[in-house]
Image (cartoon, rainbow, N blue to C red):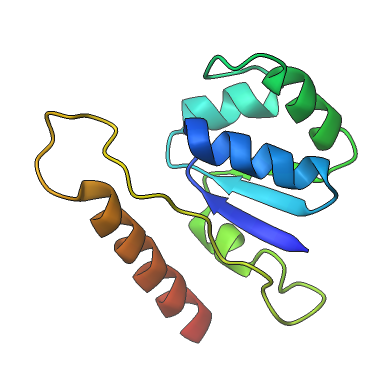
Length: 121
């Protein structure tokens, strides 16, 4: 199964890595190039025991990859099969309690709308 995980914060990175560990092909999308560079270099932008080893283990055979390219992430999984297995994995929590409203829900809706626009183009 090919899965695009939108964002590489704590929950997303953990989820994507675990899905890659059980055999799925996972592409993690994040808009922060510095974070993607850290992950591509097999570093760790967060602390979670054993996560770095799991990322290295899944990235070595290519089951876990990272990008800042939205179009690539949207089309991930369509290169051969013609159908995307899972477009994204999102969660609805606020990363900063000082931010009012449901920012991440709005961001997830924005990502979905952008993905739809790209697929229909």
